[in-house]
Structure formats: structure tokens, C-alpha cells
Image (tube, rainbow, N blue to C red; front, top):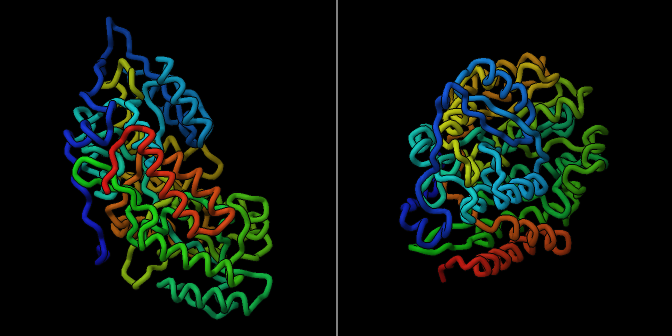
Length: 438
């Protein structure tokens, strides 16, 4: 069922992207060949932080003659992107990189990615609409989706039963459930709302509520970070923290992890990929966790996303055609997914963007999970893909936005964070010479 409040996806023309939105990133795709040259295979280089990539590359190399791939593991996050950026500027970038959806517009807008419209545009149109828009800023194709990451509610069945609460379908019900869980055990809370902000967590909730992040008006960027839906979300969570209905430990901290182990949290908000991490973090809680759709504001199915990765080709690659052939195999071939998951002690619970690979991933995960969850994580997650609200746009200055948000949240809560992020985005766009509306 499609949510009633879906926002129509903005249609951005190629000329619009070239003239105003993506500045130096315009032009056709790079050259290169996918076949052997003088009898020798084309050699590609690939950088990624994703678990299982080495096994995937080994499988590709064992089954393909015309293209060979050399893989280098890099760190995730800021350090990894800095390494990619530096390599592009130095003219020594790899041919293929993992690129999170949130970072892709920033790299594309600075002219750091090859335009893949000619080679991968048709493939991208086969993915869900909500994913297509994430890799086509300015109306051109800059990456190919790998996974889809609808936000989900993971919950402890035993702690919910103890408190006498049902799985909440709305945020109003969620707040009442939080009150009951606290009343049932003063040392337990419904979940941890990350102190200091957790950008993917918070952005996903604003996205679900109908916020758009960035947008486009004629030939200029619009900045909607601190819009009414975002303010509604911020007020709700600031209130839960103020009233002591949630924990408020830093995200990914030892305190947050300890609270889970000590049965002090009854739930958490995550993505499909969160399932594997939970198994490795709290194996002793096997059979006590289940997964449900995220509560919504009006009961209509809707969600945002948390994270997610595409594969892109950095500017300057001499083998764009071969790189996109490899990327298509990475994102659509069952052999690639089996290789990524089969050798890990606890295979990732990643939900592939390609619906045809979801069954493959679900089968591999079920084998390793061995009944850890009380219901089918993959089925619940797959059912949420069509409820991802369309209309959200990542901007070309996400790094500046994230920094400002985190700094402000630490001092004044979520409401202050959105306000600071709005101002930081406008300044960063102006500093980059990118036009803004209004």
C-alpha cells in the first residue's frame, strides 16, 4: 500500500543539473572498454569498506575473463571519503567505489564522479522509484543502487509483554508505550534517543514525516531542512528526552551497547542491516527480538531510510564501460550476493535494492541467524520498501550540514540542530557558488 502523503518526485532535467545544480559535474560519461585489450583483460581497481567485498571480487575474477578487479579495503565514513577525494584530485582514483546515497550528490556536484547515464541509466530505472531519485541528482545517473534501507522498529517481545504494551502503530501509541515501559521497570526505557544526534537516524525520521531535506526550484537549490515536518519530529523527540521516557546515550557508545545487554531498552530504530549487528552484539538474547514497521504519524504506512550504498565511478577512470559492467554484476547477479554473505560467520542482513536478490540474501541470513528473530526480518523489511516516502533529496553540502547539526544538538536538542543545519546549508551553498531559491 502506498502512503497517502507521498510527495511526488522532482523531475530534474539534464540541462538544469548542468547549469545550476551540479556545476562542473556535467558532460558525457567516460570512455574505456569492457573487453580485452591486445588479448589482455581490462584491470579495474575498487575501493570499499563493505563486509564481504573481497569475497565478491574473488568470485568475479574466477568467473570472468575480460575484466579483472583489484580490491583495496578502506575505512568507512569521513576518513574513507577523504581518501577517495584526495585520490581523485591527484589523478590516482580507483575505477569503482562504494558511495553512500547521502554523499553521492556532494561528490557529483564537485565534478568528482563519471556520468553513468549512458551506461547505467536503463539499469537504474529498474530499481524502486525511491532509490532512483537518490542516484540521479540533476537528472543524470551518478551511481547504481546496492541496498535499500527502510527504517524499522526492532523490539524485545519479552519486555513489551512484561509492560503490557502492543507494538505501536503510531507515534502517539509509541509515547504511551514508553510511559508504560518506564512504569513497569524504572530502570528500563523504550529505546535510546542518541545524545548529540545521529544524522542517519534523525534524517530518516524527518524524511518519514514528509520533510524534503533539499529540493529544486527552477534553476536553484531549495533548503528545507528546518521545515514543519522536521520541526514536528524534533519537538516530539526533544519532549521524550525532557520527560525521561527514553535513554539519551551517545549513538554507538559503550553506554548504549551496555543498556541493550542489561535489558534496559525495549526497542531501537534501525535498518535491515542492523539485524546482523544485533546478533553479534547480544547473542544471548536469541528469540527475544522481533521487527515491525516504524510507527507513523497517522497510521498510514510510511518510512524513511537509514544509510544505504551505491556504486559509482570516480572522475578520471579510463575504464567506465568495464566498471559499469562490473557494477551491474555486483548489484544484480545472485552469485555476487551469495559470495558476499556465504563466508562470513554472521552474514550481513543487507536488503538488496534489486528485488531479485532479496530472496538470496534472506536465505543466507536465515541460515546464520538460526531463529534469532521471532519473526521474518527480511519479509518485514521488504514490505516497507514501497512505503519509503518519495521526495527526499540529499544536498551537495551534506558534510557541512552534518557538522552543524551535531554541534547544535549537543547543546540545544533536535530543534536547535535542524535550525543550525538549515543555516549551515545556505552558507555552504553560497560558499560553493551554487544558486539558492528565495
